[in-house]
Image 1 (tube, helix red, strand yellow):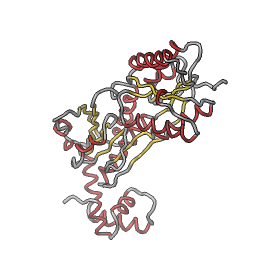
Image 2: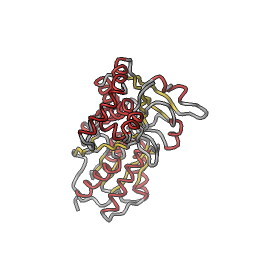
Image 3: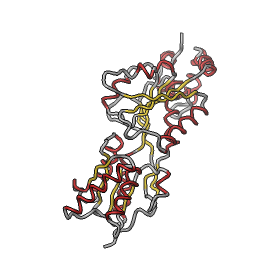
Image 4: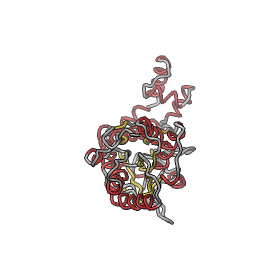
Length: 339
């Protein structure tokens, strides 16, 4: 019979968390107690079965879930994310299997995902909503959801700290003297974009500024789509004789770069500050180069794999939400506000 952490915990008279700390050499436990727990684990054959498992063909399945295909795609962001996942799987001795699937009406995603064929499942949650998570309860293998996080949900999440990151870059615009700051948002909403808008609004509120609904432009989240939609938005502002904000926060770089082109055409005599989010390669080479939030996509992928393997190897039934910090890359698109 397979020995699990709870079996060792019962034998040792401690909690499963204490056993996990002892096995993984974490802090919070005395050396005497650690050695006592490790002896019980050895006597029960726990480490023997782990060695046997290491010799088997261990697999992690990475499921790329597309609902609409409006955000997830063949982009530098997701390419780097996958590279990080591949690197960590290779380092830790796991085979990576990548699966693409969709969530459609009257379709059971587990029929195509087949989680039982892997030791654990990584799920790209970028386009998922909270209700979509119901399909992934009780799937029978460890699961980590990547690139989104929802409140009050018993899953493991590894994601970007979208809210704080947006707050920080908006605060940088405020420090440059901007008081009238708009937001360029996506017509197709995902949880990450909602979190970034919340960070934007919190920064505005904390600095005693006001956000006006008419200074939120809604655009398609592609380079061409954001360019066309931003032109329409700007032309309507001009037609209605409404002043343009001196700065805009865009919820991702594709949107920022497309919108920047439209702003240059409509407002060529007066440069408007614009910042983005993600730091895709094109951000450095557009005109002007884009100030943006840098996300370490490779690290994000690697951390998700590490958490999943921790769940696989220790039978850890706890749930964590890991939010990765970001850095701001300042380039020429952010300007000091002149009176």
